[in-house]
Image (cartoon, rainbow over all chains, first blue to last red; front, side, top):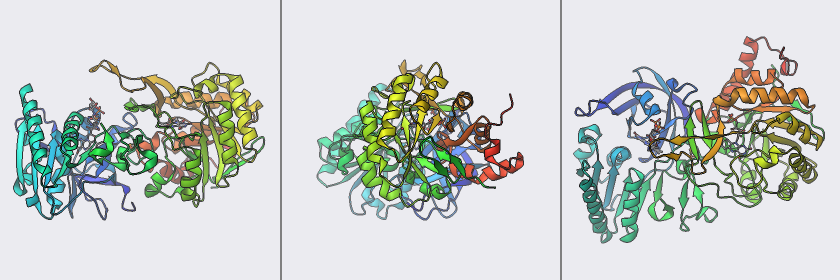
Length: 269
Length: 307
Ligand SMILES: Cc1cc2nc3c(=O)[nH]c(=O)nc-3n(C[C@H](O)[C@H](O)[C@H](O)COP(=O)(O)OP(=O)(O)OC[C@H]3O[C@@H](n4cnc5c(N)ncnc54)[C@H](O)[C@@H]3O)c2cc1C
Ligand SMILES: Cc1cc2nc3c(=O)[nH]c(=O)nc-3n(C[C@H](O)[C@H](O)[C@H](O)COP(=O)(O)O)c2cc1C
Ligand code: FES
């Protein structure tokens, strides 16, 4: 894609999310707009602040939350040394960004589409809900652990019907799984579409139900990545015999270039 | 400043626009990096390891970041040499830069067949023989750890590809890298590249499990630069054939350090993950850095370490 490139972008601001989270683990990062001509919700960037030095060699993959005339917005949770450094970025500082990377989610104007997000899996759906020409065909179920105000749900709530389920005690997980099953089952009669992003066990559950009820579903994976451009073969996922390119059926393909969004029946989690 | 370099081989020479190559397994088949820079500016690129039959590679996770480096156990995933020649090579053949095929065989015979298959591919400038992969069950580093085996593989590739410059890629996971280098020189190698990755381990305290499915993996990146420099220095002093330096190079200064200890050319590996523009940035900044350090000829500078 000619559109892709690597560039230096200025940090416009970094806003902690979640009043109830004193540790400030959640951040919205606003960067100057890159010179991309096009992008799709579900695509991602690799970001690397200079503070990584040589000690932290890889960039970090982050979903594209929103892109408009003036800026690129990402949203991240601090989970380790790399995201900790991102949380220490200063306004005006420049970071290296390459992208937009991978393939996004299907946008089908007139299809009943169910968005399923687990935790930070909500990120690509912010842009998705924004870009969809007929948002009244979208509904969303969001499972999360931290308080709701830690996540970028406001713009989504304004546009579509959003149900949220917070997981605090073990019983909540059963409830989430029950809800996932019911919602996916409901779509079967409407030839609907399921789009899911979240932790692996969450995606596995969605995949199981989608296959069980024969509902079309796309899953966005978050595998460990080094290059983000398809070169290292470190981020691969296993395909099924239904993978469209015969030579890579029942084999491994790169999540960064062939994904991160995959049809549920074409991969094995 | 003229950056062109010549690697005089025992049988076939290798001429490069400049000493900057990209290392096998870190640069795909070149085209992955086309959006990020002009591939024609590079001295050349070395493609991901090719085997006779397609290989699915190892189970996941295959990579883990470590301090100033990373471990990988990809297991040489590739679609086989035939797929490369028929599908990939035609796509990249138009680039005006050296395309070097990295090859891996499980037996001496397989190395021979790979070499024979690539011998008549005009766009392939050289073969790099991987006798140093720590991530495969058969062959791999075992060939690179035994001087006799290393010589047998080299001789087989030499026979299979009489028209190609043959680079043998050495492993640092040996008692004496000098001994292996001399042995492959004796068997007809045109040059050697050092080094491949160092065998390492990373574990997860939360899960009590290794970070990689393969348990162990190859360490690369800035962390291994001193080992690579030492290896290049030792080998360059002890063989007549050219040495290509690889291991932890991230900028033009690193490149010159390798040339100072005796490397004729170098390869950029893990640094391509630091940024997809690293290799291009290094080519672009090399003349300025040479000027800054008063270096007027890479040939004169090569191996000029005083000690
Ligand atoms: C395509 C893609 C899009 C992503 N989008 C976002 C996003 O929009 N916002 C966001 O906050 N995160 C996102 N992630 C995950 C994010 O990249 C990781 O959280 C980050 O790389 C962790 O880096 P670290 O150095 O802080 O953690 P590390 O020190 O590398 O690891 C710390 C802990 O995090 C776990 N971890 C590492 N990498 C990942 C990963 N890829 N996914 C889940 N856990 C991981 C490790 O197992 C470890 O337990 C995305 C990942 C991918 C592949
Ligand atoms: C992800 C990855 C894949 C690699 N694959 C190969 C390979 O297929 N064949 C090979 O000879 N070396 C392979 N290598 C080794 C590199 O070519 C290089 O020798 C090594 O990484 C040291 O250089 P560096 O520190 O600059 O990365 C690989 C390295 C990495 C990190
Ligand atoms: S991250 Fe390197 S191939 Fe996907």
